Length: 214
Ligand code: B16
Ligand code: MG
Image 1 (cartoon, rainbow, N blue to C red):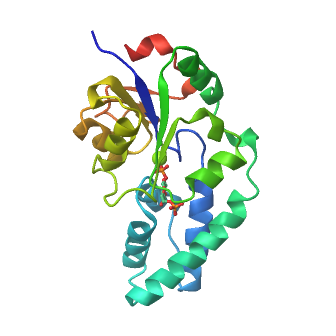
Image 2: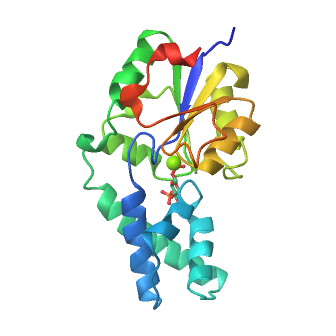
């Protein structure tokens, strides 16, 4: 029988939806550089790191920058993004998440964050969720982004659990692949057509209960 000793959660798109704030800030940056991009293109930025996102956006706009200019632009984008993050409230936590995390905790299952974001602690504080997490692994701890499994392997290790005893929750295909290649079971959160490589897909946490983990 499969055991579940730890659950590893992505942040953006799983616990809370920060994608819209990323989109607004990246768009502002693109507009400054003289071009625009669509919400559809923005989908490709989900789950990937800040610098990888910038590279893609610059490609869309056919803009070339020096390494120094890239860092300067990414820093500006992050400052705009943080203006939105500072306004976030606990109302933005996605439906059913606190209830599910309480259920995990009541059953002695460890809870870890596995996010690409370097702002994850601040976001978790703003939405009043930081207390739930036994372990936080994020963009500050990793050298390889998803689909590399590093973020989830470090999460499993920090909870003292084997990958086979962990379940990952992910909204991005790159994240589903990261979990699977790390040897974990993966629950997709969102569109089953995009996340079909997951073990199963939920629409949201209202439909998730602990018995579905085993
Ligand atoms: P930051 P996740 C990811 O969060 C976002 O989905 C992605 O759009 C963003 O570029 C990345 O974090 C880095 O964020 O600029 O705050 O370091 O889905 O891995 O929780
Ligand atoms: Mg995500």
